[in-house]
Length: 88
Image 1 (cartoon, helix red, strand yellow):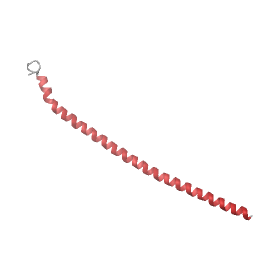
Image 2 (cartoon, rainbow, N blue to C red):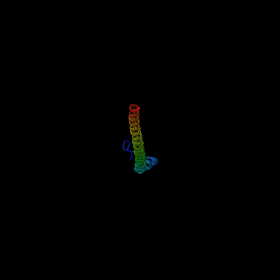
Image 3 (cartoon, rainbow, N blue to C red):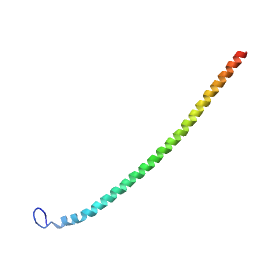
């Protein structure tokens, strides 16, 4: 029976109402599957970012080492040049 008119509800409406809870459950499950996919994508993205950061740290460390050795070489060569010029 229809709440408002007191008449019998059409068959199609009864069928739709009967399927509503099943549809709602399927929508909830599909939503959970999508959420799991997004979580997996986030996990992969975070791992990739961590890898890039680690690689950048290695490159930075190597750059600093090269710069330090370069400065040391300039200091040593300058000192040697000053010593040679004073002797000659």
